[in-house]
Image 1 (cartoon, one colour):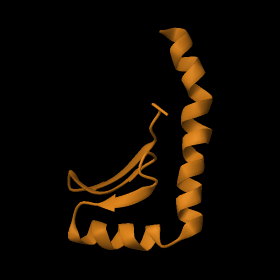
Image 2 (tube, rainbow, N blue to C red):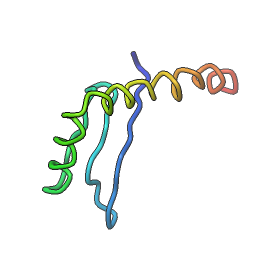
Image 3 (cartoon, rainbow, N blue to C red):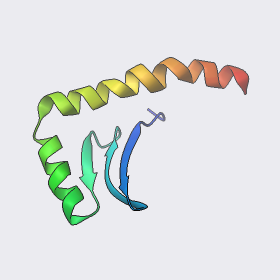
Image 4 (cartoon, one colour):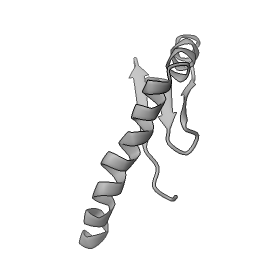
Length: 69
């Protein structure tokens, strides 16, 4: 539970949207980002794909990272 997958989109050094695996949805930080987040959150396949990324990317590599520490 302490492992978190975060996917952020930036434009001109400003964060527009972010997917947070703890929230399980996209969050928009600008007017355009809110529209994009609403669109992506309404698509169940996009949400399930991003949730699966936590398992595919983070949980597979956490053992490797902790071994080197």
